Length: 338
Image (cartoon, rainbow, N blue to C red; front, side, top):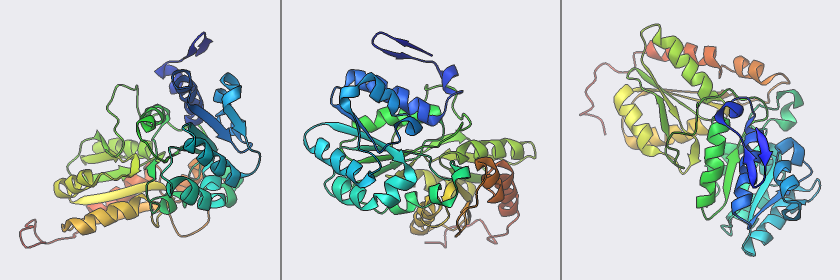
């Protein structure tokens, strides 16, 4: 990775050694070279969120509002009204809980073209404890009109999402992690479309639907079960709003067994969104959700927290075996179902 006249140069090999935050900082700087209307804003967390890369390259277009997240969104709203494209970065727990009213009313109510890149999502800031775990954000944000909600699986998908959000004229929330999220994609040579799930592994026995850091573990669990003769489909459902209903309905029709997994409270997040689609679809299936139960997480390394709550490879594999052993219907005839 090197800095050169006219921008930054990096490869996918660098990407697999970098955090989602670092890739975000690089991609935003690249976009800033092409789009002078982009401005960056931070609430005294520029280095932690890596928007500092943009600030170092374009100091005249970068604004640190101090520890005042409400002002962060208020200023971004004013800049958007003036025709700029603000990229706002803070921890996801601060963006949604401390400044939630301002995100809702200043940005979404006015449908303003502001991009919120929220880092330290889920339990990725494990050592900071419950005050810094962001396990409620997706449930809150799915209910806010006009807001697009994206949860990339790794650094490369983060780059794709950051670029793609420029094509949306309205508020976007992209939730990324803190640490070295395991790589899922080898390169950017794949189709990424906001609102469309990606089938990462085909399967006919059961479907695992995941977002964010749990996508990697879903893939590993699929490979583990493949050695046992089980065919596990894995869907990367990176966009929670708008939602890919069609991909869910196909999975129900073709595998009859569905498991969702997310680094988020089990209430109101990915699992709830998938359950809603299944209920409205009118076809029965075996269905389970994996996530954080209705509790505040303890301190710890993210990988330990994920293991405790069964959202890592071993936990997903165990749940797959459990659901596969469930006799949920006497026959395979859906003609009598509505």
